[in-house]
Structures are given as structure tokens and as C-alpha cells.
Image (cartoon, rainbow, N blue to C red; front, side):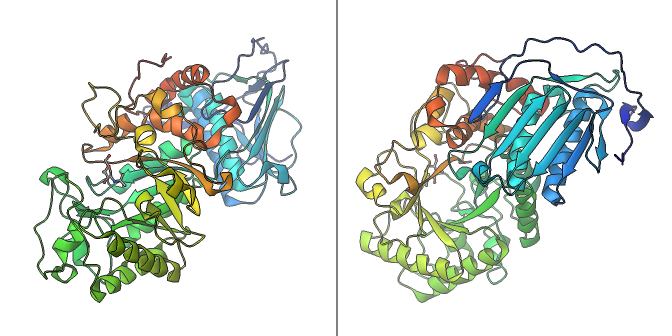
Length: 525
Ligand code: TNX
């Protein structure tokens, strides 16, 4: 066995890192702990305490990675860092099969039964083994191990303390998600969120094993992504936001950077350009997109339904072709979201024809189209995805959708108030405390073929949210509830148990500096 990094305990003093060799502590007694069920969110498919001595992570524990995949190395590095923060021990990396105390991380392509996102964790005295068929599985397994560590893993909490052993209970976890689509949407149009804000939002998703970030990139109040052939969309249309404060936009390079950040966390970015409605920012930037040839004033209010692209004019489709084309080229993921919601100024036939024409443009640029559930009555390609949001949408029409994402507003909307006293948020779909967000079944809302339901998504609209502190407050704890609906088996759905596991996450979220809502139905630890 060759030790690459040396076994070190890192003590941080006065902001400077001081690495000091740490001798193994042979005589240290293995404390006998009564293993309690770890409190994980989302709940793994199978978790079994195997009994016996726990695994002690100490100065002599090494990390052994049997895969050359960069993403697997990154997961191993993250894990090593969480352990360092929680214990004070900077574990060495081994390059050949170690026999002593070890954390083994390996990809095994033959483990078909684990699926594209599943993993297995076996913890025994002396050894923790994380195995998956893919790097994504390793990433999700690492997130599980993260939740097995003390919350001090999330920040530099032990600055002036001695290193201390960590004990993990002997157990076996075999885990894979219920649904392939576990998403959240951030509305960066009503209020602009910076690249750093969006990165932080991505981090919240990753912690909960979510794999889709839907960005609502345009609306009446602002256009947030630079389009080279239509520069005024951002130069004019990007300047505003709700309430009249300055907006902002992402350059194409920034958007690309965000996609890479999300991809490292196995999150696919889904760009949305809302059309034909919710387009005042575009209409006010380009007079020729208006039926009357006149650009309206920028809009910084919160009413909906008044704006529409001029669906009878060819220039509109040249515009859409350019916008979809540029965004499609920047986006490696297979999806393009065309919005399609709340158009109150078009006849149904006009709206339908528009959706079908846009669908062809999206297909031409190699993407699968997604639209809000108003698109369901149109003739849709087998690859098109309907995102269900209106609680009163027609069940039978939805059931015919080729594929579905479930985002019912009265359950999954993160911008609904928790209770009547919540200062932020809206309440048109009702109040959504965490129990309401958790206690429903995505498979039971429509009579669709089960395979048609891709999963769940929690939208966070930002009419009332001015910054990331606001966004965090509305997202958590409900985001964790939606993540569990997307990941965990239906058979284990149980509110009473969930609220206990959820309460155990509070300390971790606090350590991460998250401004979360302490829902009174949860006993926060
Ligand atoms: C409805 S959800 C909208 C959004 C609003 C949201 C506020 C959807 C497709 N349209 O334009 O921001 O309600 O909750």
C-alpha cells in the first residue's frame, strides 16, 4: 500500500492551515454505542443496521478509490473534506488495496441492479464501502455518508480542538431513486439571482439528491440570458425586475459556467423561455415583436396574462428560432422549456397552433420540449413533456400527455405561504405547510400510465423574493419534502417518521448558514 498524502491532522490556527503529522492511537477504546437508525432525507430504499461494532474513522483510516473517473475522485475529495471538518483528521489517499481502516469507493459496471443513479453502502468495523454502477451513484452515496456524519462536517467547527474519532454505525444501505426527474425551479426573472446565488441553490438540490434545475429565464419583468442575435433582450429587457429595483442577466459564459457547476453535482439544467405570454420584457425590447409595432414600457408589477408575442407574424418565429437555437447550443441537457402558461389574449386555436409550431422549432434544435400544463390539449410529440401545475387542470387531458412532471401548485409551489403569518410568498393556491408539501403521491394525481410520470419538481417563483435569504426561507424545509417524494419508495411514505428525520436536518442546515423556516409541525433538533 502506498500512502499518497500522508496521514495528517490539520489544525487551523489564526486562519492559516498548519498540517501536523498525527500518530495513530492504537490504545483508543472503541466506545460501544447503541446504534440508532440514522436520520436521512431522502429516505433510502433499504437501510439495515447490521449490529456489532461501529466503524471508527481515525488518524490511520485511508480513502481508497478504485476508479479513474474525475467525478468519483471529486466525490472522494468532498467526503475527505467533510470528514476533516467533522473529525480534524485529513485522511490519506491509498492507491493500492489497503487492509487496515479504510473507506473504499468503487464503480462496478457489472452491478446492473443498482441502476443509473443507485448505490450501496456497507459499513463494518474497519471498513466503509461505497459501490455504484455509475459516478452519479457514487455522488448520491457520498451525500448519504455526508448525512451520517455530524453536522460539523458542514463548516470549520473544530478549529481549536483536538482531532477526534468518528463512529459510524454498522449498516447496509441499498438505494436507488423512485423517479428519474427530481427537480426544482428558480424564477430568476421576477427578481434576478446572481450566479453565486444560483450556485447556492444548486448546492441545496445536491444535498437532497435532486437532479434537475429548471431556470425560469424570462418573464414580463425581465430577460436574463444574453442572446447574441437579439442583444437588446438583456441590454434593455434585462434591466428591470419586480418593484423597479435593478435586474440583471447572465452572459452566455456565465450560463455555461452554471451548467458546469450543476453538472459536477449531477444536475441537468433545464432552460425556460416563457412564451407566447409572460413576454413583456422581450416586447418592450423589440417593437417588431408587437402586433401593433410599438414597444410597451417595461413592467415591474406582478399581474399576469396581459402580454403575448404576435403569433401571426413571421418575425416572431425567426425570433424564437434564434433564441431556441442559441440556448440549445449552450445547453448540453436534452430539454428546452417553452413555458406556455397563462395566455389570456389569444384564441384557443391560435394558442394551439403556436405550441405546435414552437414544438417543431425545439425539435429542429435537437431538444425535447417541455411546457406548462396548458399545452396538454395540443398535438404533442412522444418526447414532449407536460409540467402539471394547475390544481384544477383537466385530469383526462393530462392523462393523455406523452410524459409528465408533477408540480401541483397546492403541494409543490415553494412560493406559497406556509401559514397566514408568513411574510413572504403568495397564497393563490392555498397555504402550503411542510406536511401539505410532503403528504401526497405524484402517481395518484392523474390517470396516466405510470411510466409517463417522470417525477416531481418544486417551483420557486420570485415575485415576493428579493434575495437568496428569502429564497432559502421558502425552499426549506419544503424542498426536502419534494426531494423525498421524488427519491424514496412510496411504500415507506410516512409523515410521522418523515417529520422526525426532517427535524434532524435542522442542525446541518444551520451549519450551512441556510435561512430555513422552522415549521411548527417538525421537532427541530
Ligand atoms: C403562476 S405557475 C404562474 C407564474 C407565477 C406563479 C406564482 C405558472 C406556470 N405560472 O407566472 O409566478 O403562479 O405562484
